[in-house]
Image (cartoon, rainbow, N blue to C red; front, side):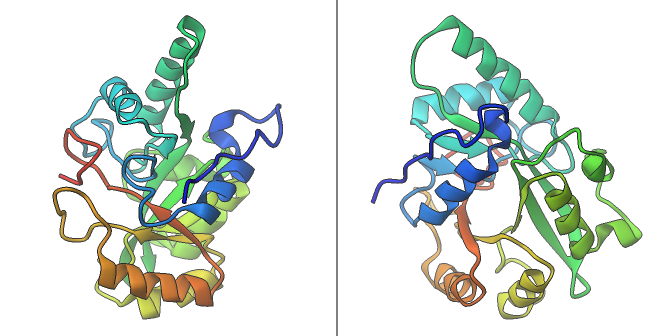
Amino acid sequence: MAVELAPASNPLIPAARDVTALRHVFEQVHAGSCPTSFNFHMHTVNSDGQLRPEALMQQAIAIGLQGFAITDHHSVNGYRIAQRWLDEQHLEQDRFLPHLWVGVEVTSRLLDTEVHILGYAFDPESPAMQRYLQRHAPQGEDAKAERVISAIHQAGGLAVLAHPVRYKRSPEDLIPQAAQFGIDGVEAYYAYNNPNPWQTSPEQTGRVQRLSAAFNLLNTCGTDTHGLSLLQRL
């Protein structure tokens, strides 16, 4: 089943912040969407990745990605560089280029457990997000999951719980609590054992999908790339 991008919902909103189009994609994402059609979890040298944003963009085009987000930890610097590069490509050539959304990964606390929350399609200039874009993990009250989720929403974005089966608490504990705090989705399709070639982990995916269905959450996919290939985690 192919995933289609929705038409631009508001011409006044930058494509990178088109939350309606992104929600439309998340509603259709399936196990085969990642990593060659969509990828919503990747890192650059602007946090703990090895790829420069320009090289990441070139690779995304070569793979044929339709849409993706750079989710550096506590920074949108990689996204900004990639967006400038993409804008230049649009001016220089008339060919299909992938849809890039704003993204970030924020370290947070949920049920007294460290978790990571992915933010998408938010306004990176929003005052609500500035404390989470300082290149370091938030501390104290700012690190509470409910505050991170609220900040992403105040900035017009979607909040997603990253790799829900990687934490000290079970997804059966964490996802209901995150849903109570207003989380929009979960990273359902994730390769926990870093297989080559990449494929989502069936048992963990099933657990997360059952919970996302129960709480009416969106499902996302991503490789969580830290190395030199967007097709792998490491």
